[in-house]
Length: 130
Ligand SMILES: [Zn+2]
Ligand SMILES: [Zn+2]
Image (tube, rainbow, N blue to C red; front, side, top):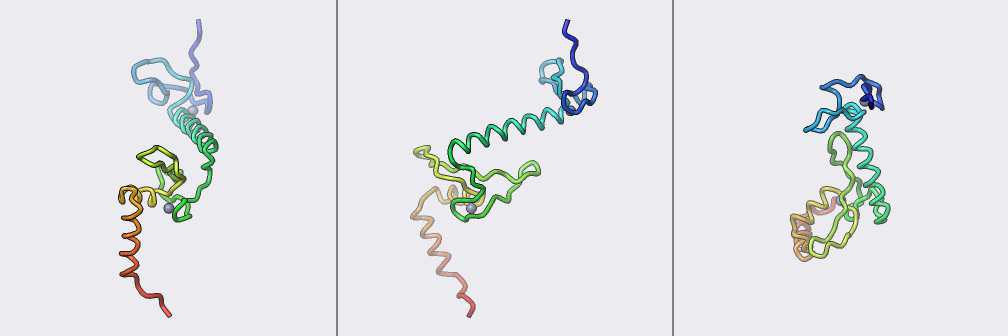
């Protein structure tokens, strides 16, 4: 008979009903506590995402439009810049920060409209200080 592990394989905390990770519909403990399980899941996801970006040649942290790095955070970490793709063709275009990515979306990825918006802003731009 296989004796179930009673300590977290990572941090060695004694697993209980409350701190042990288990599938919602089963009572069999995994050998990790919930915290270690969450960290492990994140670590695996990160490694997978890093590989995917490497394969695409998109490891840069800089936005292809504004050149800055991402500042928006999620779960306490700075988000990875988005991999932008053309919604019509599915072709991957590059890495964008959240702001630029939403901007393109709000302008329906329409270059003419974006140019018109730029001209509109320039019309009302404050003159450069002498
Ligand atoms: Zn643990
Ligand atoms: Zn940007």
